[in-house]
Image (cartoon, rainbow, N blue to C red; front, side, top):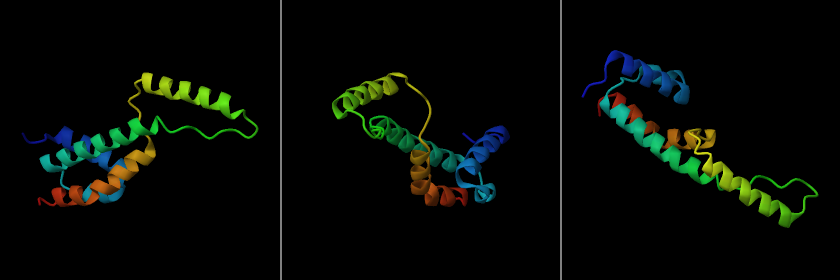
Amino acid sequence: MELNKIEQENLKAFLVSVYGNQARSWEMNDEVFNQTIYMLQESNKCTDLMDFVPRPMPLGANPVSYIKKTARNILLRKLKNSKNQYKVCVSTSAAKFKTKLVLAGLGF
């Protein structure tokens, strides 16, 4: 199923926000769409794992109390079921999928 003009514009706007102006020259086709979906799935995996990374402990904090509080906060972040993604996850996934997206945009 071919992307219509509005879908192509939306996809291009998203890719420009991730890759910058270079994405403006890419052809928006079904394969570019598919690779974008794979990139977002990869980013989601990363984001899910980032929720488990403890935040830095403040100077002078009691380590045992801090670990308990951090564990509670990790659980609450996971329960929040946020649709947000960590920038580092999007950037890493974007770098990983850039070649595939460029080639797909060129029709390969």
